[in-house]
Image (cartoon, rainbow, N blue to C red):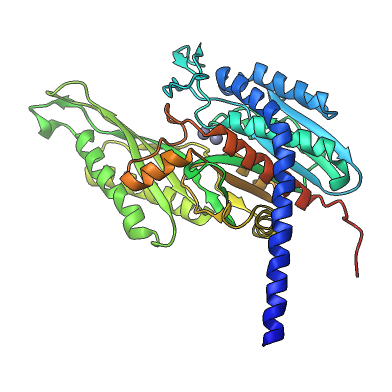
Length: 441
Ligand SMILES: [Zn+2]
Ligand SMILES: [Zn+2]
């Protein structure tokens, strides 16, 4: 027993030591590139561009990568950027950032807040803001590009950095794939991304094996009735009453048909019908968002919506079947379990368990899943972005923190970006080890 204790003590001492040394080493590397990344961050934050209009943003990233020795291609999927750095035999690893900002008028009051206004694709005048933190991702990605280019002895393989347009519902991942991302360039063995997280304190790195973000579908429904005078309901079929019953019946899909262990959401976010108190309209329009984590639950939700919508209309004697249109939404993002485990062990070893935590999934959606649907093992890490004092105050008071996409979202950019760069570099070196192919026996 005594020997065992001594042995354990030595092991722990050794582990703690090497951990402390690793932390110092990666932190030093990150500190060295941070000033340039912060300069890029402030520039990108002040100059956000909407989906598929990221021309200046893409040009900044392309110029940065070219300066570091990457082979750069622009215009991939409209405004996408691909930078390749070959460094001997080894796996191809893709690291993705998004380029686009949102039509949100910034209200943070920060000295570097965006004041940009533009016309959106419908010609509407909108404010523009990096309210999802894609500016954090881009400037961290550039810091990682810099470290990887200057430490080639520490990894082997092909590093593929992509700047993807139009993540915000615009189909940017699909556009890059359709433009030959996996045929004109090496097909990756692994794909990696980080996304900032408005639920966690700045610098916390979140991982989770399996589904982390949800399937998302929009369902548009038109319920048809027979319009007429509001005082003569007997001569009409009232679509407002059908719609009201339908909205309530839809609530039973998740509560009565889906296992409590399978996350699912059916939200009726929009309902429109009628013009005046004394007129029964001839149709009502509904719009739903439908979320789930698995293909099976997604299919169940969508078929139950069809069944209920048709049955309620039939029960009311509607003159025709409702029109139900399901838009091709995003797929759940599933972190490859083996890859997640491998990277999580490396992150804990280098940064310590207090900074690297298993974090629960979120029912939001991301088109990074498009790469995984093509069979590439993928991993998205989450990086906490909330200023520590604001986080602690919110936990104490129970007040809600501004979410991603909020006009008030203000990431604590220094610790967030430093954690993102460290996480990316550690992940890439783990997936592309310098000693790959050398077997020690
Ligand atoms: Zn977003
Ligand atoms: Zn985002």
